[in-house]
Image (cartoon, rainbow, N blue to C red; front, side, top):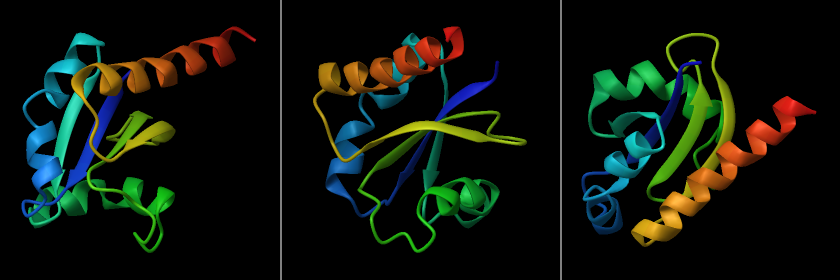
Length: 109
């Protein structure tokens, strides 16, 4: 299955920048594709906007950065979970792993 972590961030966000030192590495270590969407990158943002807006229609409650874990980001996507804001490397990994574990448990049931 095609699973990805999509990071929605801003070039002006210090926490987003700090997370960029390890978020891609952690996602890839967990076997996930990593897609970095900076809001200022119009072409990339347009490509993944429908995923963000399905979770945050007016973007009011989203955090910086917002990570959406989803199936099939290039097609009929399904959001599996999210991580909002900045976290230490270990906590970020734990939060992503918890989503993967919950999905695996739900699939088994």
